[in-house]
Image (cartoon, rainbow, N blue to C red; front, side, top):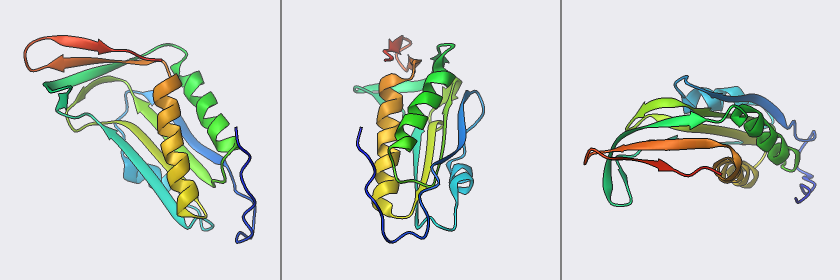
Length: 154
């Protein structure tokens, strides 16, 4: 992992606060997540909303269900801590929803604040990639043709 570079434009070191890490059935509001990471030292807030889409691999999707392994919350917290430790960010909020979701629902919400946009965007993207690669959450898609499929998890 890389060590964050020194930022001489800041008056203080990055806060690296984790304001929320959650795996659960609660609806996710990305605007609310942005508010959780707001900080006067942050010149940028990057957000990501992973929404349920109506298609996958050329097939229509009606909805899906996310199922988490009992260790998913611990794994998510560990992933977030590792990324935050090596990033020049001020605050991070992350949650993955489980249970039944409809097309358009938010399944993954990430918000990152940092002094500059490069750190905010980069850390947000890295969090999404690491979560998808490492957190044991399975997706059961329900397709319009009456079939369903499980999508592999890490």
